[in-house]
Amino acid sequence: MINFRIIGRQFSTSISKQNAIKNVTVIGGGLMGSGIAQVAAQAGQSVTLVDVSSDVLAKSQKSIGANLGRVAKKLYKDKPEDGEKFVAEALGRIKTATDPGEASKSADLIVEAIVENMDVKHKLFKQLDSAAPAHTILASNTSSLSINEIGSVVKRKDKFGGLHFFNPVPVMRLLEVVKGAETSEDTYKSMMEWGKAVGKTCITCKDTPGFVVNRLLVPYICEAMRLYERGDASARDIDIAMKLGAGYPMGPLELADYVGLDTNKFILDGWHKKFPDQPLFKPIPLLNKLVAEGKLGVKTGEGIYKYDKK
Ligand SMILES: CCCCCCCCCCCCCC(=O)CC(=O)SCCNC(=O)CCNC(=O)[C@H](O)C(C)(C)COP(=O)(O)OP(=O)(O)OC[C@H]1O[C@@H](n2cnc3c(N)ncnc32)[C@H](O)[C@@H]1OP(=O)(O)O
Ligand SMILES: NC(=O)C1=CN([C@@H]2O[C@H](COP(=O)(O)OP(=O)(O)OC[C@H]3O[C@@H](n4cnc5c(N)ncnc54)[C@H](O)[C@@H]3O)[C@@H](O)[C@H]2O)C=CC1
Image (cartoon, rainbow, N blue to C red; front, side, top):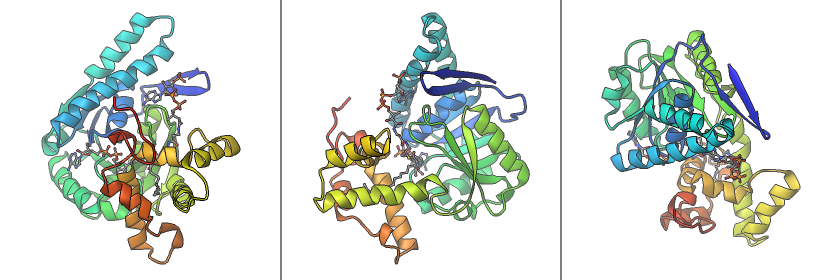
């Protein structure tokens, strides 16, 4: 494995000999799916990126190209021509498609990163389970849903698990590998090995709500939003406080906009339904209002803050 440490951040470009996964299909070409496709392609794997929308796929290819450029700038600081080659080769390993069934036929691993909705995920996984070869591992990048519940619709329960990445995927170094009740030891080992091969540090999680990171992060962001909603402090001051007082790279409200307020709402609504007595997961009227107005954060140009449209 080749490791690069560049000014505090580490990028690993590695093709592990033990990693048997060569062909990866990523379903969902949004924020997370495009990042997952990028890191797999950077690691030398053949990737098919699938979305229902060809417009989304065109946008994803553009952002992957730009983000690979940022990585190349650091890896090949003194050799820009090698950097260009790196970008072109990685982009060349990514195909796009709009039919998940067709795109599953040659996959060793399928990572799902579509909308955070159980019914939509169930419909997709049923289709993937019948289309993919018997050896293919199916995994979900869900932030908050139960891996066992998502996997309940597939026959290959031993080859189903969770691979939870963090946003932005090319930068964040963690991967939570989630073992479902019926995930086999071989599948778990393959997922850990693949995570390493795409440059991540893997931790093992049980199928508990939010795994590790989001079990801690969701209440924190919710409390920040409530603080702001009550008028106890301005959004800017809350964010400055957590950056300068707690050393976080982003404040909680900036992070909520960065993740997407729709995703925040899917998570909170789902957990409130599941745990109605838990005060930490009670609905937040301001969040509901912003989402109803289509103010979803960075991706729509406005959320808690306003952003320049690119
Ligand atoms: C609203 C209330 C409702 C509450 C409801 C519940 C809330 C639920 C919340 C949980 C949601 C669930 C999400 C999830 O499942 C898990 C997550 O992913 S949580 C999010 C985790 N991510 C973070 O915490 C991000 C923290 N931020 C950072 O690390 C940095 O701010 C960031 C790297 C994003 C940007 O850094 P910054 O210095 O500010 O900006 P730069 O643009 O200069 O970037 C720094 C550095 O990194 C390179 N870079 C940035 N992005 C990319 C990219 N996409 N690809 C490649 N490279 C990238 C950039 O080039 C810079 O490089 P330098 O060499 O340092 O210049
Ligand atoms: N946004 C974040 O910071 C993080 C999100 N996640 C999880 O990743 C998943 C995706 O989140 P994002 O990328 O933020 O969402 P997003 O909204 O940016 O992208 C989702 C994409 O899936 C596509 N899609 C929807 N249904 C589809 C289907 N049936 N087949 C193919 N494509 C379909 C949509 O067109 C959209 O482009 C969710 O489960 C979310 O909880 C996990 C970690 C971090």
